[in-house]
Picture 1 (cartoon, rainbow, N blue to C red):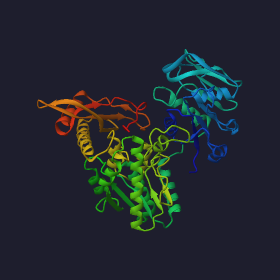
Picture 2 (tube, rainbow, N blue to C red):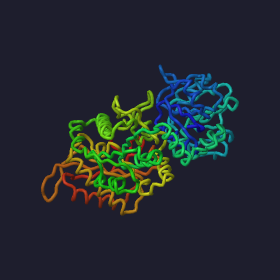
Picture 3 (cartoon, rainbow, N blue to C red):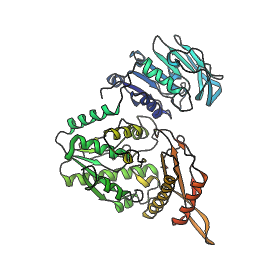
Picture 4 (cartoon, one colour):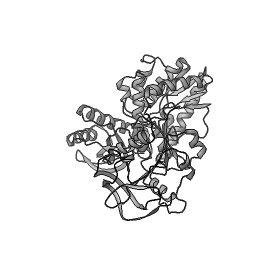
Length: 511
């Protein structure tokens, strides 16, 4: 893509995705890469600016991660956040020490110089700190432009060299002026124009796909979710009848979902797609028998998808390309370089080593979820598809804790359908909501008889980008009604819990 770009170098920070998302909020394209990316790769990307993330290390630890100092000679602005700020301090001859008072959580930012990266930023505003070490001596050429009561160097800058360092996290919502600080860096200091738009992205992708595929045949993995639906329609616009969409009913879908997907995209649907439905329910149940570990489960599901697509491709003829609805959070959470794997997405970290296709096409790979929705609208998809709740590729397989069986799938399907029905009727706003089946069984009593059955966990979150999320504040009356219906209508369930955990520290899905 011939776009201006901000490069985010990751040092293992928990907010790496969120930093990238905030850059995109400025309508500027952004990529996250591991900190040890080579200088040649950086130069080839030609970034307009570079951001270092935070991380769990201390700069004085053995083998603490550091960038090649040649990066400071590229002539582009560099911003270090938290650990990134401390690393920059160390590399320029300043000092980092263990803070007399560690800061975790909210702090009041006192501005000493309201200019540069702090231009038009309000004084005495809330920022979000998370550090044990702090900058105790500013390097030569830098000046302190903001502090807190316990952190003498909250923000420092070297205008001459275009280097900036921030001890707190401007990317999180708790930092009130965070968007202003980041936009000052991205738009004012780096000089980005903010031309990252979905209309141009669609045109570029259609052109790129046509050039790549030429007259070849393409198979699209269509689940009916937002990502795969947008991918299918984008590919259809690009190559028309050269595309075949394969929908795998793996027996891990929500109640009635297989029928709904077939109705929308099948022969009588609105999109005139070459559509194939594969009933693989028993095949997946057999594959998952005895598997309880989440990563192993995800990878087993991902491999089976690929094998089915390979089989269907052979029936069609020579198919060179497989299309997946992979999006950028999938890529980041599945691990970047030496960064931690949060969870292997079935279409990234869950792929088998050998895939019998010439190439996998992932037209949404650079996009976040809300950007995918914008692209869907640009392509003319109706709101009921574009706004559909995210549903993981491994389906209910990762909403069932422990081993997956047909009986467990039936339980969670019924409980989930009740929860979604009642929440939809209530008018309460949540961005994603579902029921999961825990692996806990407990004693209960129904009709004067002892029961020993499963507990259902309900999950509802509010979020804009699915990088961070908060539990939805559901009315107590709604939770009571859902609980009563589930324990009365769903066999083998005698308890219902509501999950109040945000993201982080949790993920939206259970596995």
